[in-house]
Length: 418
Image (tube, rainbow, N blue to C red; front, top):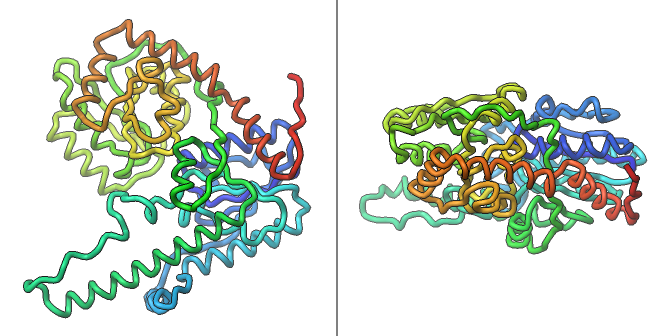
């Protein structure tokens, strides 16, 4: 196949998944070109060795004051705001190049601004989308729900303040309604929408009114090898330093582990909110928990940590899939995870990890079990490697994505005996 890939991704799980797909498809002889924007993180994706060319087109989402006023007028008329208009123009430019390139299929991926990408509207070849998750800001409380009403007016309010909040609320809700309308239209423009878990598929159905197809990811064990190193008295967290990844819960949980065996928390993230990291430092000091934030570390160092930690704490809120638990498992690292989202499809309780409710006390008890019961830790470690080798291999994940792309263009995958 000649495949046009489109994405607007930052560093993180979505980019790691796309890197895996591009690498695997290229190794099977498919020709790939990539289209992306100047605000995406192409350096993190790092696929130049696998693709014929990467096209980076300019895109800006910075808004001036006069454009903010225009957006308010457009909102009242249910017209798209400036950022949507810019994205539409950007996608038209990408589509013009893709349509002229003689490609068999578009393999679109998520957008960091809008989640559901607009590129599908303008490309006239078969179109498949791999969507990490719907736009959570529009469809979930994360942590606040955008549709929640203002507090009722009372005698303590100044009339001028109330009028200001009233109109701001109208503009905000109108813009959100337009975004929902536009994203649903985007969904309808793809021939096939692929998701990373059954949990994500349910979210897709709730958000956009139609289901997709589950196309599970996998782990390249050559990138996450098991080195059989001695385990050290620290636990890991993996995920960006943002609230929805809940490193604060990991700290609160470890604070409940008896001080004599309380491990250090090493949290590795690819990006973060500096102010939030400072809040985490303060929280850890108050809780008497050693907290070591590590940002954008080399891959070799990540593998070393996964091979020497005692367990991985996975506290993300409603994570759609979660590559981190499987990456940890590939390195023989047991996982203690909140039983939410796609993690319930990868972590089998008491087999390759321990699942708990979103309660620090339960997570603390699970960590204590792993730290003090060597037989349990060894069994979880063996099973963790086994489950990755049997169910979550890189080759199987590429089989799935290749099948999906062949089906999108109306053909069957050509199976090669290896």
